[in-house]
Image (cartoon, rainbow, N blue to C red):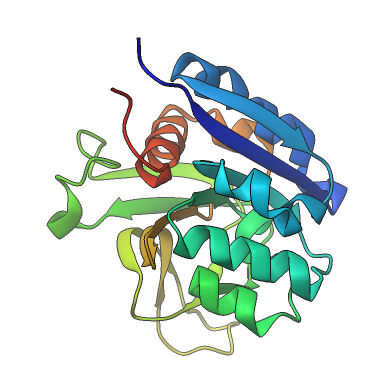
Length: 225
């Protein structure tokens, strides 16, 4: 019989991103995939070395807010030791804005969404088309939601991008290509981020749901026996 893995869902922060409702979308999938799922509504768990050592995957949905130094140290230590980390939208890339160590961990920071809810296209990078997270997805798909402008670093393996157009009314004078989904290695741990997920409906778009589910499994430590 396969040994179950442990997933920790940490949710809270700004309620506008529906941390409970969006994370609840994926809890049944995690259980079906063989995970014991624990839910925490505070960040204190990150500072618990025993819990973190036994956690194979952290799903964080926590927009803005502040993280204490011992909580962040525990999170970084766990990921470096092999615990996977995954999430979407502001729940991971607009978290703990004043913490430079957290930004380094994610390799990215939300900068803006120039238009509120806008129809835009997500493009899978051709060179990543066979990656297990995006394999079989359409080369491009469209959706109407926030289009994130991201500041990122070169350690990320970008799987998909979107283009934010320049125009007569924009202060930028050329189109900006911004990452939508990426993976990242940090010590022995794996990190998956998708910028899509402003609301529940965004995560229910078939391509987005598949992308997110696969990203969660990719990031998790180990494989089921």
